[in-house]
Image (cartoon, rainbow, N blue to C red; front, side, top):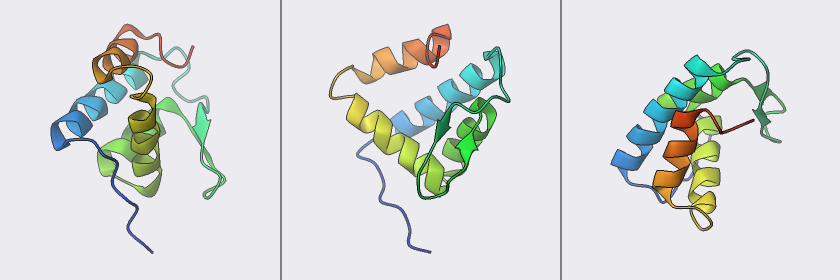
Length: 91
């Protein structure tokens, strides 16, 4: 398996995002309902699985981090973290 390309995020940003995702998944009203999927795996991920993927830096986790990096072109990283912390993300 080819190692996925790392997103252009600092290690600190990745750790902050991982913690915020775990917090979001724990508070999500439907933590076992799929919220995102990646075409290459064909499997949808629940909030809990997404947080785990980012924490473990799996292929899906790296893919999500790249999505966040692209999102930072529209919203600052801190706004993304606030959205996860407030529970607004994914609703």
